[in-house]
Image (cartoon, rainbow, N blue to C red; front, side):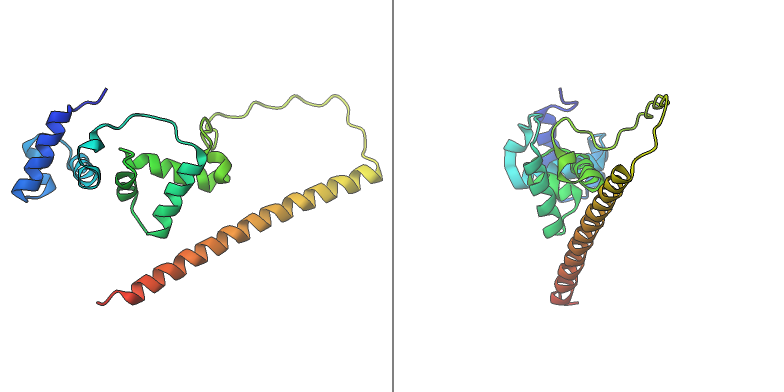
Length: 178
């Protein structure tokens, strides 16, 4: 259940839009956080009264990734992105971004929470270890090399994406007259 009623939200938004005063002044008048009022107004401007009908639901990884791509492509803030997609809370988009950076698109799957905060359980000591044969040792080295090359490839892809974003921002900065 929401802390504020729809009628309260609507009256705060209309007070801001009609009076044309700052967020802080109107928020103080309604005894609320100005950031919250700013979020409501932004969402109301984009979606009207439908912005009040947000239902908590689980989004699939593809939707989350498309939201992140839109945010990166258009250089939007977390707040603006949340308002654009009527998500209600900008910290949700921030969590999706952190999950993506920590584990790729797989980390965006519903139910996955990204990095685990709990300490890993200590592994049980092995009773006896037998030395690896030359074939097993060569196989292990090849698997280690494949894993290293995969990590290097993923790093280079991320670096390329970052370069594209920087170049897009530079193009936008050049187009804007000062």
